[in-house]
View 1 (spheres, one colour):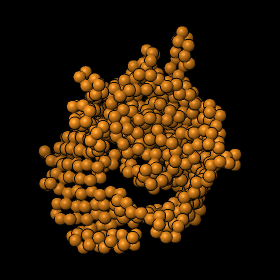
View 2 (cartoon, rainbow, N blue to C red):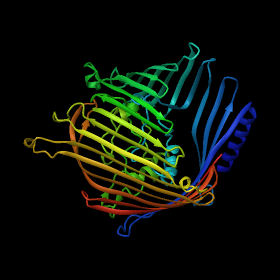
View 3 (tube, rainbow, N blue to C red):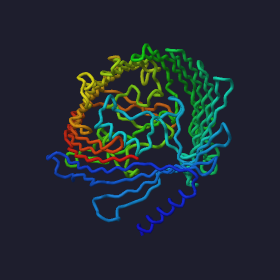
View 4 (cartoon, rainbow, N blue to C red):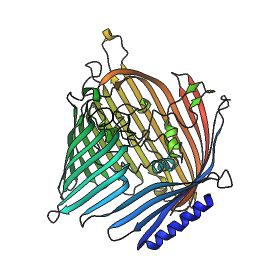
Length: 564
């Protein structure tokens, strides 16, 4: 049966190619084998093995006619653990029809990538990144590819129409509107959920002015209530661009329908303001700073939905110490927990009402990015590199506090400092082969003192992350790699629990004193710019003093990648 399907697929592809006036093909192939096992103290859990899972993604981009184009990605997968076709499969990763409606207007329908602004529709990156080297970056790239995290875009299924029109010689008005279906109704209790958005922008050499609107709404009509639930976000952004200085601003508000039980009452409204500037002091030195204020009731599912689903258990060794203690998602799961089967992934693709769960061990200053509710303060960023690019440094800090007190009138104070650097020793020593040392350090904290009369412990939660990496090309295209990553968090905080009306109804006392370490060593060979093989061994050490839980995981990877 699989042979028949394979021949049918090949014949269909050839038939399509023959009908296209113009077409392009591309894609990639990956083979991943890994072996993971707990330390000898655990005698219950079995080793986790993945014997060369092979995927081959074929991308086809064809011009159907003058106005319509077709793009698709087809995945063929198999496990080389068995030498037959019993474990093979075929999946359609993406299908997109796009083209022009007129000279200045285009459309896309199918699997579309969408983003707007940091407060309306924005896919913020996953936690734990400071300055990782090639060992971790290889696997982060795979995770983002497998879970459709293309930059800050959200991958949705729907329709987008966009265009632009020149007003004067150097002035342009651009516009975009889109609609997606987030959830299909079961006609009984689950409603249809849709996401709609639009933006219009005016651009010139100096001024940029934009208006944005997005709405996540549910159609309950005909199910339980004759009403709809809506979460609107409106914003305006205004920028001024001079030769070396760029002034940026965005402000707006959200309007969330109350629950269906209270749909006659007022809507829940929140607002935000973000202003700042970027100053290019020289070609190698830039500085930026911004001030933002986000109210406690600001609700924006498109920018507050998290990339990681922390409500899930890790797919590898969800329980440790002979299945006595359950563990949460950690740094290693986010980076190295690659699974080509989408349903097993801890990465989230859902945009929904409310705030997603997050893991406080990564810090609580900005769990939902810039649009985290109840925050006010400043952030600054500095980037420097010398003229020969021997050393590159990026440093940033944020000093924030609660806009309103949570539980008491006293507000928390938040701080975050981080620095990252790349040191190209080969340029300093005039070596032909790559010799790169990289590192980074990030520390964040939340603090709040309580009156003695409350008899409640003060808030004092700290999170620190260290990144160190070395890449040395000992022979042409053959490199030795090593990296060290450490997360250590300790302290106490009281995390708000919100109900369906986005109102804080209680608090959860979170306390931790833990260390996560990743010691990694690898060998990499680049056949060319698009083909490589990586052999990687690493030890993951976990120590949680609160839960009295300590264990290690050993992992061995072989990764082969070919792009074309």
